[in-house]
Image (cartoon, rainbow, N blue to C red; front, side, top):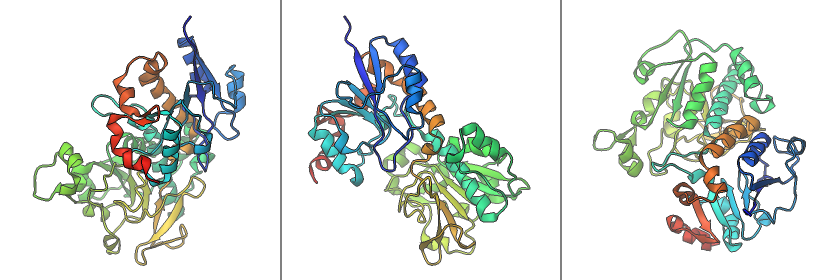
Length: 406
């Protein structure tokens, strides 16, 4: 008789708690029909976006104690006090870059002999991520940028995204606003985040224009432009831009972003940034009389990174602050017109958790779960396995000092 594989859906323990889930109740039902030897159990939660009753209605059992489960799925980092020894966990751990705030959690995972697969590193052979929340981060980040502009100019009002029932309601409200003719919006990046932001701008009837036209023309309608690193950086020695070279040797490049600061009203930052890369602009640049940017929706949220006004992450409940470029200090949001409004929420998909969870679960089911649930050898899963029975796998041996030094 085939062994039953028991899977537990974890209650999120990060503070503040995340409301997303890795799989929705209907997706769990579909998986149990596809894989009869698989059983799911859900830890009760009072704050996840799908209620306990929604799971129970579909006969998915709630279970506080998941110690008899083989595989445990969550979304964000886990409280080290809740770790069950010897299990296999999947979630976004944010440890592979030696993040200090997750150091103790990672050590506890190793001490308790976990096997750990990080969602972030589930990739195709050519490095393309297969499960991510980036699209919804872009959708909501761009919406928050427009919302900040409406508050700052007192031209229109948008409901906070987290107060909307779902994406359809958020976008329905967005269709009702009228943006100022000539408004210019810049989107950086070329991944899921940037393309999610473009979805929102399309709903708001903002027209896309080329980088050349964006920098050199005025328009009688609101417009946006999307740029990748080939537009905002160049090689120090004048070599032709190569993306692969840029990702390998970002320290050899300089910023060419400054012209965009003179043409942009709203900056929506959705790029990937390497700490060795040049910054987009400096605090000195922000004092220039021709610096035009008044709202920065920093979806990438690299604190003290390429955008010098991003000094901290904000929260869903308190999304904005003002940066005074002349005093170089944070001030209350919308306190004076000369300040730059900053939105730097680092868990944006949590504003629309049901929509974000639905999309994420679809990706997980399409790309990952078959091999995982049938225990089929998978190079993809192997690449994303950071710990195996408490030991670092060869790909992640560089974390040895991070793992052992407290």
